[in-house]
Image (cartoon, rainbow, N blue to C red; front, top):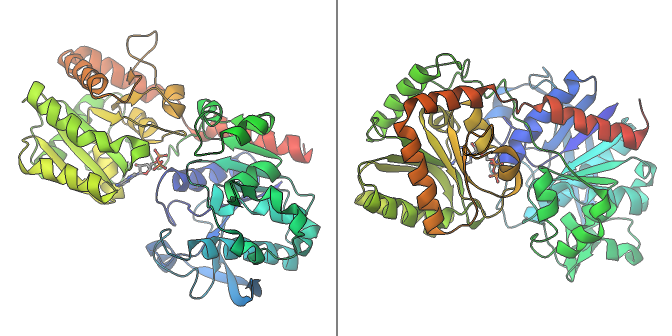
Length: 473
Ligand code: ADP
């Protein structure tokens, strides 16, 4: 079975968050299950493409409204990722260093989708399922069914996975002419709230949509940035499949980004050494429990609460903990987190994106804090579990599906319900108290490292879904 994943991100080619991790891992595990899973993504001028060999397998010309553009499809020649990787390069549109945030982002992703479909039609490439990820590829299920240019693909099933329903790729109707061969009477399938909404269009037109955790599937009906009614209407088509993690990339026993590797039998000493190293580098006291936050500094992650929380905790529980934060995002949140650094002891932050530092922190920290408002799945808590780091999470989305409170049977984490300062303080104080019982901490670390959150089970669930749509055994 030939499954083409379409995505804006794929680790290690280009990653901004969880989407990249998933698209870098899921296809590899599917190949292991006998599926020919492939990935097509935009070309970015990044380290990976400079350091790996590519062949141009197709050259074409397409049109974005009145503007013609040339494009190339590049294929990575060594299959280093464990699956076929294709990049769409469009001079002056898809050849830039960053993944997002250009003013013509809409044009970039529409052109990407048009080029992909042109390539598949012209080369008669055999595809059994289109698996589209997030709004950047959300027009594909619509285009293959309702554009006369792509009608030969109309019967191919499409699966759409929602990694983040907050971002929907909205664009004005002035861009409708970008979509070739579309009868305007079908415009309603593209629309939500008076604009073209690629995420909504995908949910309406795909054969099945999935969310990256079962709880998030339900939560989208209550909170999805304006699409609540749509998710209620289309609820029958949705399936929640919890993300897995790539246990080859995220393996404390072999992780080349760590100075000290460890297993569940050596977790105590291994973590101690990594913690000492990182605390030394960031001027923190390694004898205290080390808390961390890793992630995008945005409201979705509850990040605007962090500066106040850390300040308040330093007043109440001074000298009882250290805190190291890694993240980037909204400027005012970054500013607040840097400002408290000027007068707080045992707190430090690295504002920026650093893959290696994140691995070092997962391994060295004792607790990871995730006060998310919305968390479709959350990968940080899964990486933390694998590295023996206790997650402290708000009970939402994938956090709810993957973290059991230590007070409950079989539990290992700390949960709190509301994004209120006092609840977060109590959660951190519970962690500090727990840390005093080192025997329990070590038992929890071992227990967490034994949990299986690998892709094995979830990759199989996707394969079952493809089979049910294609009737290919
Ligand atoms: P989201 O995709 O919403 O940002 P996820 O929890 O699904 O959140 O995935 C976040 C991924 O991005 C994890 O792999 C995490 O380690 C990584 N990450 C986030 N911020 C940073 C950062 N500043 N530096 C390094 N890695 C980061």
